[in-house]
Figure (cartoon, rainbow, N blue to C red):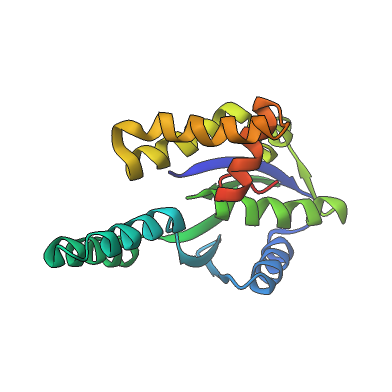
Length: 190
């Protein structure tokens, strides 16, 4: 899942990339500048819920030793084969830059850095960027449903709806419940 957004810089590219490098390094990312492209990488882009589900299934199926062992091997293979989180920033024209990120945590990290640079008036978000800062409840729901489907198969929608209804019974609106569950599961960081 690579997505992109655009922004305009009020400072030279070298200074912008230096600022991005400093901010991403503070957050524990590995920043690099390769051929005029800023790249920051973090740990593996792994769904903690997927790993936890595979490990728990492994424990539950331990009595059938080989099946439990197989689920543990699936969890290990999933983590080993996952891509690193990545943010790439490239100058598209003049002072316009394009940002490409490959998962929601990378997106959140970049938007956090971008907000700081906007506050310091070093960059200027382009029209439409504000909309990318906060995903809609529908986008959050679709991402959660996709992840749940990978974990629970055909019963994913029912499980997700049950968790949302529980939050709604606690007094949240449907939209608030989606955002709260999305935040809890890491699909929504704003």
